[in-house]
Image (cartoon, rainbow, N blue to C red; front, side):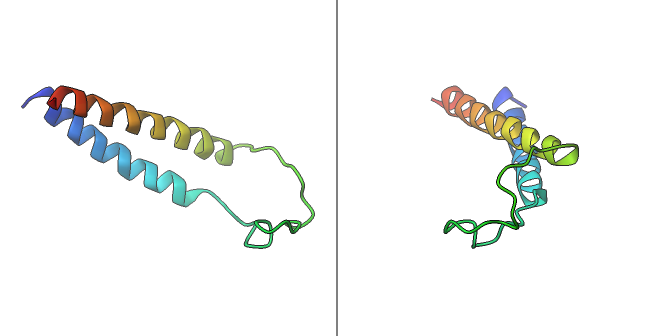
Amino acid sequence: MTITDILKYVLAIDSVLLVITVLLQNRSGGLGTVFGGSGGGEFYRSKRGLEAFLYNGTIILGILFAVISLSIAVLNA
C-alpha cells in the first residue's frame, strides 16, 4: 500500500465528513433573504455552540480536502 492509496482513503473519509457538516448546518433564512428581505428581523447574529463547531469544521475539512487532492495530484505526476 503506497502513500497515494492511503491519501485516497483519507480523502474519501474527509469528503463524507464534509458533506455531513454542510448538510447539518441550519440555513433557515429561505429565499426571502437572498433577494433582500429580512430573515425574521435578524440582521446579524453570532454563531455559538454546535453551530460554530460545524461552521469551523466545514472550513477545516474543506481546506484539508483541497490539500489532500493537490497532494495526490502532485504524487501521481
